[in-house]
Length: 220
Image 1 (cartoon, rainbow, N blue to C red):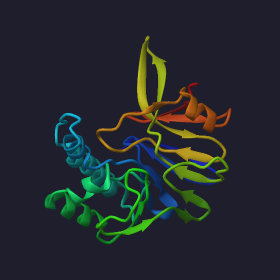
Image 2: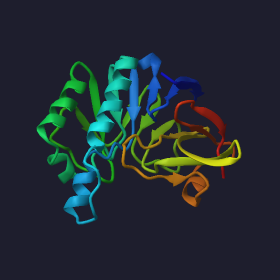
Image 3: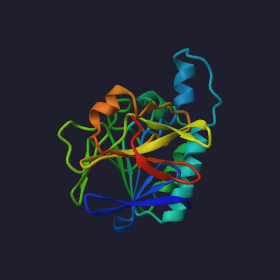
């Protein structure tokens, strides 16, 4: 399992190559923006067709992370489903798959802007969750202190070996972590775009995920 260890507000954490955040001391795995059912939603709204494999691929990667870490608590940081109807439209195979992943674990669905209300799925449905001083919510707040959020699907662009490389990335400063999107069909906002530059402090860092996660000053 390729990963990068770092410390946030005196808390040892690990960024996994998948974009999941692992908190070893709490046996806690946090994932953001799964957007399950995106292909179904696109087809339903007449936005074209996407290959209908994103739910399977996302759940396969999540299963692998849970097996490798042995997580006992899972926090899904909102926009776990592309909308409420997409959650309702999940086929029985994927519903059973999620139920198996939840078995024997504490599982929290944080409300997102795509899935604001409770869904008919196991686990606890909450607006936000505080664990040992860290607050998990979907969208960061301006006065955040010790916060883990998602929503923005951050990516970072750097020059590497003479070419430009763009990867999903964690963004981190003294007060907040913004996780990358975990879902298969998810775009992203570059770290140099105004919303993220305005949110993140001047000494913010980025952890680019992928086969070899790397830490560097947040590209602006």
